[in-house]
Amino acid sequence: MPDKNRIAELREEIDDINLKLLELLNRRATVASEIGKLQIQYSSQIYDPVRESAMLTELQMVNEGPFSNETLNALFKEIFKATLALEEKEARANLVVQRKTPDQQTIIEMADGTQIGNSDFQIIAGPCAIESYEQYEEVAAALADEGIKIMRAMAFKPRTSPYDFQGLGEPGLKIARQVANKYGLLLVSEIMDASQLHMMTDYVDMLWIGARNMQNPHLLRAVGKTNKPVILKRHFAAKLQEFLYAAEYIMSEGNHQVILMERGIRSFDTWTRNTLDISAVPLLKKESHLPVIVDISHSAGRRDIANPLARVAVASGADGLMVEVHPNPDVAMSDAKQQLNIAQFKSMMAEVRKMLPTRAVKKEHAGD
Image 1 (cartoon, helix red, strand yellow):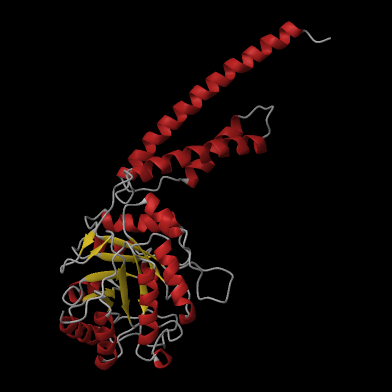
Image 2: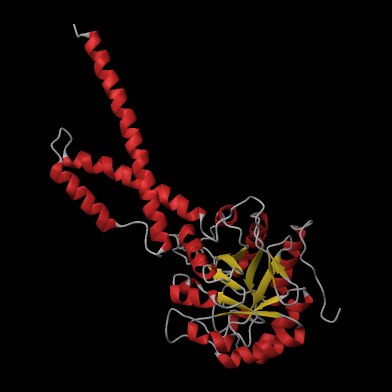
C-alpha cells in the first residue's frame, strides 16, 4: 500500500513547483516583452532564430535529465512560441495601421472632395493600360456618365514577360491628365520605382503600389514621404499580417492616406486567375482603420463573373471596388479577358446600385 501521506507531500511539492514555474514564465515573458519593444524601436526583427538555437544548445549542454534533449527542445520551443506570440501582439497594438478603438476610421479626402472610407461606396475604374487618346477618352466619358470620380491611369505595366506591352510611359500620363481634366476625373497610376515620384506627381492625384512591389520597402518608404493618397495592393502570396506591415512602412514615414486593396490570392484552382479572398475585407477592417477596396478584375481574370463579384464586394462591407473597363476588350493590349466593355460596365453599376440603398454611388452626368 502506498504511503498516502507521502503522496500528499509530493503533490504539495508539485503544486509549489508549478507556482514557481508560473512566476518564472511570467517573469521571462515580461523581460522578453521589454526586449521586443527595444527591437521595434531600433527597427529590428522580433524573431531571432540564431538566438533561439543558441539558447536550446546551451540548455542541452547542461541538461542532466530525466527529460531527453528532444523533450527539452519541444518544451522550450512551446515557451519560445508563446513568448513570440505575446511580443507580436504587443507590437501590433503599437502599429500606426492598427485599429485602436471600434469607431476609429480613416477617411481619405481627395482634392475635389471625393472621400474614400466614409459611407459612400467608391468605384475606381478604367482600362488596364492607356493605349491611345481615343481609347482613354471613350472610357472616361462612360465613367463620367456613371458618376465615377477616380480613373485608372496605368502608363507603366509590369508584365510577367519582358516582351509584352509595357505601357506608354510618361506620354500615356500626359494623355490621361488631358482627358481627366476634360471630364473632371481624378487619376491613380502605378508607380514602379522611387525615381518616378517627381515625374508622376505632376500628373496623378493618387499613387498605386502594385502587388509586385507590396514588399518593396524602399518604394513604400518613398511614397510614405509624399502627401499623395496611396492604394496598396496585396500580393497574391502575402499573409494579411504582411499586408498590414507593408502599409505600416508607408504610414511610418508620415503618409496616413493609405487604401488597402484585396486582389485575390494564388490557389490551386485554374478556373480563375486568382481566388478572391473576400474574408480579407472584414478581417482587415477589424484589425485596421484604413479603407479597404476589392479588385474584381485581377482576382478573377475573367469578365463574365464581374457582376456577382461586385455584389460580393458590396456585401463584404468594403469601401469600394476596382474594375477594368475597355471600349473593345478583345483587342486590348493587356489583360483582355478580364476587362469589361462599356455596356458590361454599366450593367455592373446597375447591380451595385441595387445593393446600396443606404450607401451612395451617385450618378452625376458630366456638365450637371
